[in-house]
Image (cartoon, rainbow, N blue to C red):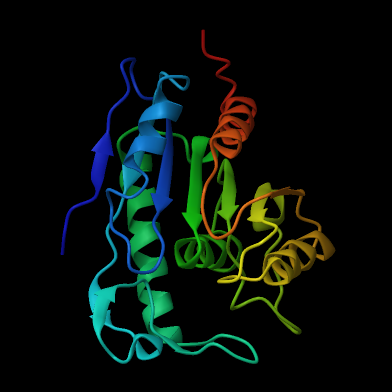
Length: 222
């Protein structure tokens, strides 16, 4: 298994963003974004983990980097829950490593795009037992959110920022909105931003992410 990319800040690290890529991508996918954000967040470390290469059913069973197998696309995503849990454990191990290095978990942000976002939503709100600085949920959904699922009281204190493309035909905006509404109904502080894009990331969105991270981490940059 590949080690995560570590992007160290120019100043002593006192915050961390753990950022998961999407299906079929790799740990380098969001490196340019992390570099752009770190120019503004000068004491924030970025950790970019790599999903394992494994067969993906909706890809004809061909192996590709994936946080979990997607068995079917409709009517709702059918996923391999065991693999999702394994990925959540990997994320929690990264949180613990940052905590052990001296970073307050309240200054650790989980970010994820598409499938990576589904993992961080599951990890932050259903598995991690403790504080976090927030969650960036990018063009993603909550496959483990639903009726009868309860967000623990500690996790209700974790804010979540959802960003989605209005023309996304991979993860429909309604899927992202459903995850947003689920958390809102559970008392989580959530925000929703839509962009005139498909399943991608825009420069304006990166600026907005920088604004949100600066507020969460109290680092306004130059």
